[in-house]
Image 1 (cartoon, helix red, strand yellow):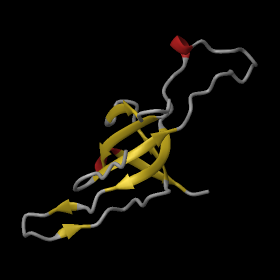
Image 2: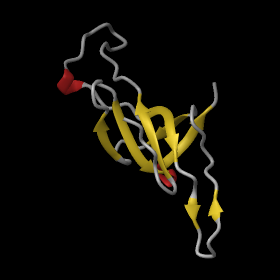
Image 3: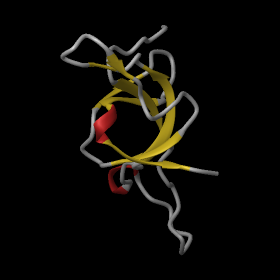
Image 4: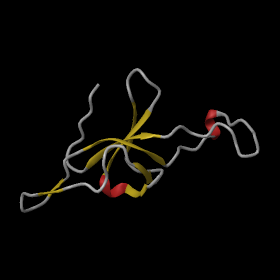
Length: 98
């Protein structure tokens, strides 16, 4: 399935949740918190302004980003267990440089 976001929407593949605490305890699925970082896998063309021009996005495909836990809408990619998030660019807090 090929996803193509519209306008200023971005599709992010959420990083996997931690399964072990720093003390070595295994976490059950109910105790895992959703990671608030992920990799941009698709980005729209940018926001359409009132004058008809487009403002480009600040993030690019491949960027690792931080976002709030309630940002965007979650869905699972068909055939995998990967969790994807689709959100507006303004919901991204920061881009992580490696």
